[in-house]
Amino acid sequence: MKTMRAKISLILLLAPAAAALAGPQPLADSELAAVRGADGINLAIDLQLNQPPSNTNNTSELTIDKSKLTIGQAVDGRTTWLVFDNVSGRIQMMSLGISANTGDDGTNYVAIGLPSSVRFTNVGVDSINVQSDASVPVTSSLGKITLNGDLSMQGQLRLWSH
Image 1 (cartoon, helix red, strand yellow):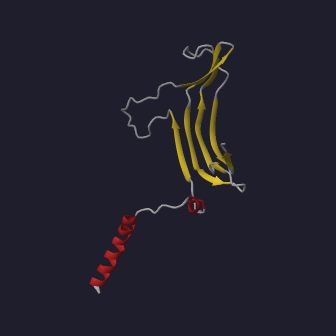
Image 2 (image 1 turned 90 degrees about the vertical axis):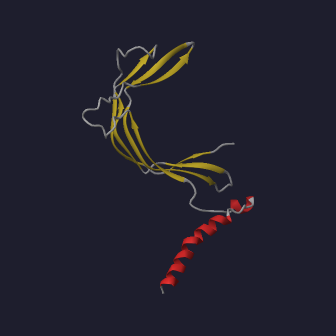
Image 3 (image 1 turned 120 degrees about the vertical axis):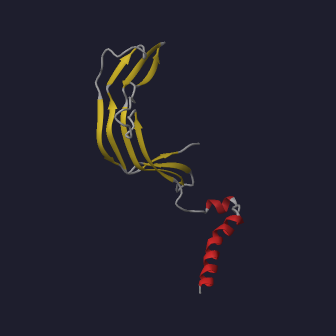
């Protein structure tokens, strides 16, 4: 009885290896076009912007330096900068999907499924400024933004190209 179990176990152990040695088989374009399945990928994203590490001890001197996000716009030879000072926070997205699909009319498109939920934790900027030089210190501010909370979404964003 033990030898029979050992033989069955050995066969079950080696069967996937034998299948792997067979290798992939090429498909004709018409056969490949007929293949249907759960294609695409789903992503879970945890984006932490300028956040201190959570595993630091009290003796650490690790700090987050000041940060700026600048966007320059040139109009009539003059560049004006929109400056976001100290961009920080945490954004968590669940189930952001990306897949290649075929429409009813036969056209191909990329579908980006909206994330089912997004959580914002202290996401924002300390100041928003308009300046003629992005490198000078901030002297005035149009305000600040801070987001905290959850957002639920459904649907798709579809992209075509010709």
